[in-house]
Image (cartoon, rainbow, N blue to C red; front, top):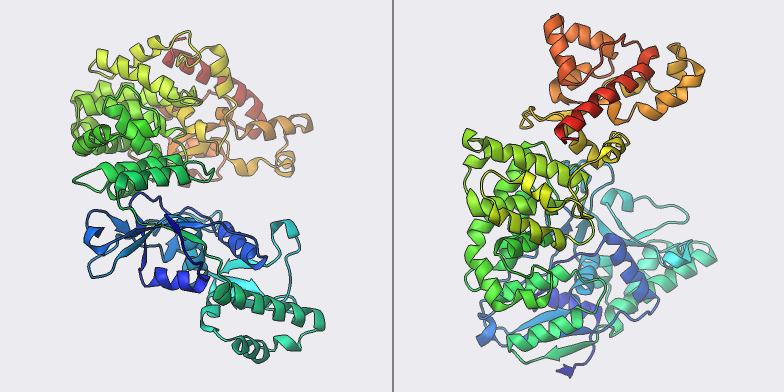
Length: 581
């Protein structure tokens, strides 16, 4: 390994743009936020060191032995997070980046690319929630909070960048690549009347723009080492030594990188990333990641040690996972479809690890679509649903999930069809990770409220007959629009009860699972009026009330306190029945 002559940021950006710099398959993907990129540019302007880089030189004749990827050029938090595979045909040798990908990608996105991140509170399926942004620098004012930085770098939309005033002039950072001569900096300042500002602002604009020019064009800030040894084992060892010590590296990225280097027929990185994208689109959408897939593969292949450590990602194990990958991926996919049919999504699935025993069971017994609907597997679906709800509510996988997965795998191996939920409960009785419920557990469930992740699982436990393939909403029985102090007072609620009302309208005792269309029709209608108009037939009304654990009382808002007490008692008895307490 040799220390090479440092280069400028502009040279590095050109090398990325011309695809002279590539990424080896052992590299993880880009994970920096827009804020991290902004801080990096501020650090450069303040002359802070940004660390050295490590490159790997691969001769053209040996390039076909490895897989390489390009840098991301336009990052999109939803639609473009994966590096495209590089075409290495041609006569040129490759320089692969072993250490420094995050920083180099950040520099490229700031100077030549774009960064699209989601606007808070907008829906993920809304394209407008991800506007395209470029990096800008305010040339007229320092940041007020010096701890956050001195220079105001921000990713802005085109529209936002046009908002200029006495304290703000947004300069597109990428334009500096085209301002090569120092006199061009002066020309820019004059043309845009920045030197005509008051003395303090014009001086700041002048110093800031010249400093940015120096950082991009003149300062050799890219210090790098070049490794020319092309033995993969040595390169892997260097990569592990360099990356495993850093706190910012996701360890599973390193393990996936090793898997990618070990697989023979398939590209592990592409297979797993595309598979994660696929299962995250099931139903209303999920938030699975590569960690979940890698852990599931270790469990399904029956490796005795399922920990995330380099030793378990040896060549023998990785080749077994590659061989079994079609069956592994199909078992996981069926599991995800199954829990989607149970009504779960990214907001209500509080632990992805709860799916691993389901995937293992399907992998060993039923790798085909019939598990989803066939009456032959009715008991399996019932038991799996119960396992999912109980394990989520008991937070079975908090702490050390491997200590739960191994014994469950033993139970599943000893007990075949149907899914042995009772045997799993028995296995953990008396232990810290017990899946059995007691009176205190049931009482605690009534503290869950509307909008919390565990509320759906709690309600799903007492709605086992619903077909969740139809979309169900968590509905306020007494509409939440009523519950303001002013409206309750106007409706005649006693002043002494108002706080109790406000504390309970969002709790489990006032929530039910209702199909989407009836829920929309119900909207803000008083419950007493809605149930009479929706269920004119008294028998149908009684059936609705029984199915939703509704007490038979006068539903005037002044009786809400009575409703909460009586419904909680009805629900509690049903929880005890379902949980056999």
